[in-house]
Length: 173
Image (cartoon, rainbow, N blue to C red; front, side, top):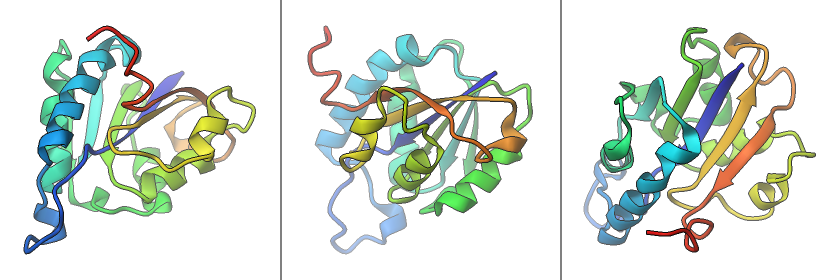
């Protein structure tokens, strides 16, 4: 049994004159990433591997979100995750080692949201919240992966949790 967590980067700055790949987090994005990151270790457990898009905003999110994880997980920054479509994400995840049983992916929409909806069992309690709105920045969808990574996408997965910054608003700071 493995766990997969799909995490959308925190709010980034407006595009302006900066190339999309180089956009950094906004002040609000940094604050939200820190706040969400404070709660993630208790919600996700010990992460074994983080796969992170190589874009600046995802790397900045990674740094802020992982600040409270002990021990720090193994981290792979990968160009192929930048704005990746759901099928590309799925193919990458199918190549994971069986020893990596708790994996966090930090990436972009619409690919992450589309993948989350495609993977999720419609009967999962959190499915309605995931499917009925957009996948906001700093949101995380968590799945129980059975039997192993190579079979990812061959059947629907139990969506075990769907965390958004708003869903954490009532939790103690």
